[in-house]
Every structure is written in structure tokens, then in C-alpha cells.
Image 1 (tube, rainbow, N blue to C red):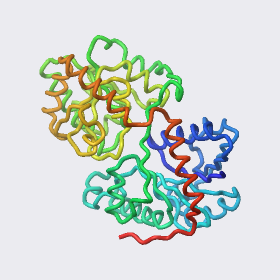
Image 2: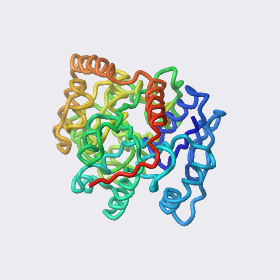
Image 3: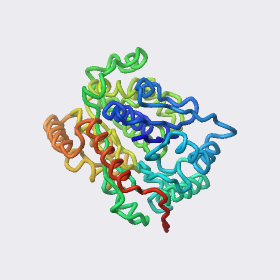
Length: 389
């Protein structure tokens, strides 16, 4: 197959996408993957494969305008140029009918949740969110199949008006030793973590967005410090990120070594980081499927999560749940987990059982994706146009 891949995303989701693409290129060497992305995108590891070809679009005036222009006109040229059998794209990249089928990756709940709920958690302006949801509908009209990560997102799409029989559920995986060789942390990250090996250290792996709810953890750590409970929190944020939280206590906790800002952590370093920590926290308010939940369960770390439907659906009995905005409840439960070895082991064992429901490696994920691609190409779902409410 010749597969035209459209990837304009960034952050943790884009990192997983690049890793999946690399795995697919290795697992299916007979296929050719032509990746269209924006200039200065990080596809270096993928380009080492002979069957992965990266085409960087020059950004003219603005990134979003470049994406829009490509989605309306440039994509047809690339379908022809690459002799594509299939287009594989993100959730707002194709705005016109094509002669070949389109498979969409769908992971953002901001596109399918009710407007009021999505707007409440959205970081940017209402205009930007409305525009993204508009272009998402445009891509839906031209899509033959959607791949989502959870049954809850599939249900959201059905409620949104997209037929459930054209939705495939393929969860993400956690890297095993065959996927990624664990890398050491940087000298600066070691410096930040150093000296606290005998102190119970919690970990929250998330970039800085409002819906990630870092603020409640800062307040909880402040309460623990006042109660003289010895615990630390490692965050994959920079000191500059923490300043955005806007509370004076935040940087004071950093200076006291209670909050440990590690900055961006490469995918290959994640296992090393988890091994250095004792428990995980997940206070996010708005998710589809977070890698942080899976990593905690796979790598044997007990976790405390926000008491929200997405978390209970994912973790079941493998987590302790806390009201998402109640800092005192977070502090209380963190202290209880720290001091209860039996609870820690119970959660770890439940997490190991829970992970049996998920793909065991990214190679398995790649095989499931390829099955969807083959099914769609055989069905020749080109020239699809649908109406959505």
C-alpha cells in the first residue's frame, strides 16, 4: 500500500503518532508512507526508514492557514503525486472529497463533547475552538473510517451523528523493551531529582494545559508541607510552566525541593523516570485515553486519579479516586497512599490485571491499524461525503 499520512499535531499525542508511524514502517516494510507535515516538525527517527518519506510544507503567514490551504487544495496533488491508496490523517486535515478512502485518527474529546463542556475546559479562545470543530465536521464528511482509543469516544461520535459501524476502537500501548530502549535522564533532570531518593515521590506526566489541573496538586503539596508529611511531586513541566499557575506557593515549593520541575521528558526516558518515582497522580479534567494512566499500571505504580468517568472507565479498580478540585482530599489520599504498603500493592496488582485488556506492544497496535487500512482499501471507501448534525 501507498499511504499518504497527514500529521500537523504537536505535544504528547503527536509524539505517540510518530512512534506508531515508525513502528508501522518497521512492521510493514512493503508499504510506503508519505508523510506531509509542517516544516521543522520532528520526524527524524521516522526518516531513517527507507519506506517513510517526509514532505515538509513551508509555513506561509500562519501555521493554521497553511494547514487549511493544504486540506482544501494541496492534498489532491499529493494523493496523485504519491499514487496513494489511502489517506491517514488527524482529526481536522481533509476538507474535500478524494478519490481514495480516508482514515482519521480521533483522540481529542474537544471535538465531540457538547459545546458548553468543551468550551469550559478549552485553553484558547472560543473562536478558535469553534473553528476547529467546524473543520472537524468537514473532515468527518470525507472520512471512511475513524480510529479511536476508547469505547467512550466511539459513543461520543455516535451521539455526534457518525455511524458506529464505521468506528474502530484501537487503544494505544505502553512501550516495552522491544519498542524502546530505556534512556537515561538528562544531567539537569538528575540534578532536579537527586537527593530525594529516600522521600516518597509522586509523578504527574502531562504538558501544561488548564484542563490538566496542575493547580490542585500544587495546593495539595502545600497542604502536605504544612502537615509536615514528607512527599515530593515530579512534574514534566519547566519552571516557566509552573510560573503560569500564578500562585506564590508554587515557586516556593520548587525552591524547597517539594515540587520537582523536570521539563519535557523524551519517550525513551519515561520508563527511567517512572522507575525513579513511587506513585502517580492524574488530576486531569478532560481526557479520552491518557498514556499516564496506562504507564502507571504497566510500570507498577499505584495511582490517584480524578473521580471522573473517563478515569474510572480506563482504570477500574486499579486507582484511588478523588474529587478533581478538592485539594484537601488530594492531600489526604496522597498521604494515605504513601503510608499504606498494602494499598500500594493492591493497586499495582489490579493495574497489571487491567493492562491485559490493552495491546501488549506498539507492534500489536500497528497490526490492528493495518487491518483497518486493508479493510478500508478493499472496500474502496473513496468519494465519501456524509452529513452530520
